[in-house]
Image (cartoon, rainbow, N blue to C red; front, side, top):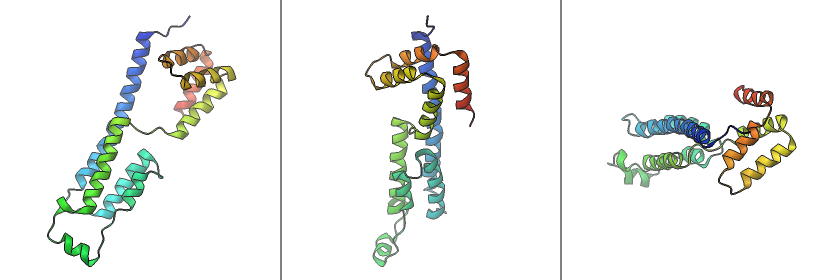
Length: 178
């Protein structure tokens, strides 16, 4: 007998969505802070880049194209670019405009797609499940995940629900302990 039902499923889905939403809110707040700092009177590109790279590496990883684009932001001090930029303010500064575009696109990505999945965390979860579950159970879960079925969560929850309490407790404890 399974105690997993539509009401419990909805509760679990809502909890997961709330957690993901809170994670995304924090990341977007950091990006908004960096967007605001582009308007500072005493704007320093190198300092701004350092802060922004730290945030973006934490969110997207060191190899992210966003991190690479921020690292590549530089002023061109050739005589032509200095002449063309003379008398213009921050509104038309090409480096600041490019920085703003990168962060705006990053913000949109987070708002619509959420925080990228961390491959290492996924591998850790699978490793823990493989330690505590039978090969048959692991294969069932993988098949369900690969299927086009609408009730994926319910079916996986049923498999997990049928695990011995001790095994499930061990899996959860290992996930929580770094």
